[in-house]
Amino acid sequence: MSNDIEYKAWRVHEKDGEYVGAEETCRVADLPANEVLIRVTHSSLNYKDALSASGNKGVTRNFPHTPGIDAAGEVVESSGTPGKGSQVIVTGYDLGMNTPGGFGEYIRVPAQWCVEMPAGWDARKAMIYGTAGLTAGLCVNKLLRMGAAPEQGPVVVTGASGAVGTVAVEILAGLGFEVTAVSGKEDQVDALKGLGATAVVGRETLEASPKPMLKPVFANAVDTVGGAPLAELLKQVLPGGSVSCCGLVAGPKVETTVMPFILRGVNLLGVDSVEIPLDQKRQVWHKLSSDWACPKTEAAARDIGRGDLDGALKAFLKGESVGKIVLDHAR
View 1: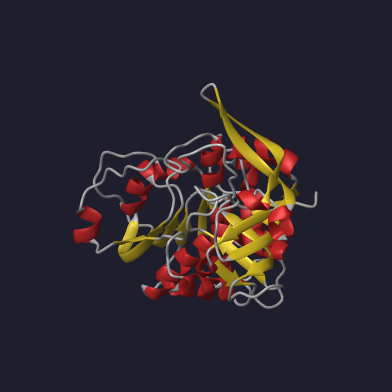
View 2: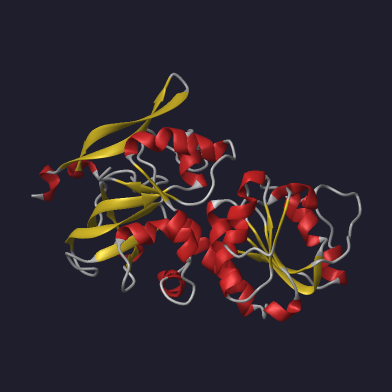
C-alpha cells in the first residue's frame, strides 16, 4: 500500500523563533488527501522557496513544512487523469506553500495541478525551467500578445542574471529581439551576452530620479524585480510599449506617476504563474519544449542534492543566486 511508503524530505521546523531546515524521513500516509500521488525525482529552486524556508508567513503559515513550489516525476497512484505511470509537472497553486512540496520525494496533489510532460522532456529538463522558466515564458507571451516586435527597438530585462531573467533573455534573443540585460552582478556580463543579450548594464541604469519622465529608450520590457527599479523603468519606455511585471525582489511598492501611462501610453502587464488556468501553463510548457527552447540555459543549469538546499536558499535571500538550480533527489 502506498501509505506504508517512507521517503526523504527537506523539512523546515520552527525552533525558538528561528527556522531550520534539514532532511528527515516522512510517511506518505501523512500527505494530504488528494487524487494524485507523485514520486518526485526533481524540483527547482525559487525565491518563494527561500521565503518559505526562512519562515515568511505570507508564503507558509504553518510549520514544520516541506517547501518546493516545483516538482516533476511519475504518477504512482491516481483516481483518474493523469493515470498511473504518467510523467507530470506540478508548479504553482499551493504546492510548497502550505501543501508539502517538491523538496520531498513524494507529493499528493489535486489532479488539476498536473501538466503532462512535454514530448522529448524528462523531469530534470522540466525542472531546469520550473516556475521561473514558466514565468519568463508567460512574460514574453504577454509582450507578444500586445504586439511587441524586434523592429520596435530594444527590449530590457531587469534582474537578468536571476532564474526568470536568464530564461527571458534567451527566449527574447532567440525571437530576434535586441536585448538589454540589467544586472548588478558584474561577473555575469559574459554569461548574459552568451545567452544573447546585446548589452548588459548595471542597476544604476534604473537609479531613482526625481523626474516624472525620462528619455525613452526601451520598446518593451520584462521586469522581474518590482519596487523602485520598476518605477524608473516605466519612465524610459517608448510610446505604446509594454512592461511585463512578475517579481518583487526590490520591493512590493511602486511609487510612480500616471505620466508614462497618459503621455506615452505605456502598458504595465501583471504576470501570474501560480493560479492561472492549466491550459495557459500547458501552452507555455509546449513553447518552452519546442520553439522557445533555451539550450544555453539548459547547459548551464546546476544540480544539487537535499544536503545543499540550506546554502542555496540562503543565497537567494542575499541576492547571490544566479542561473537555474535543480534539486535531484537521487544525489
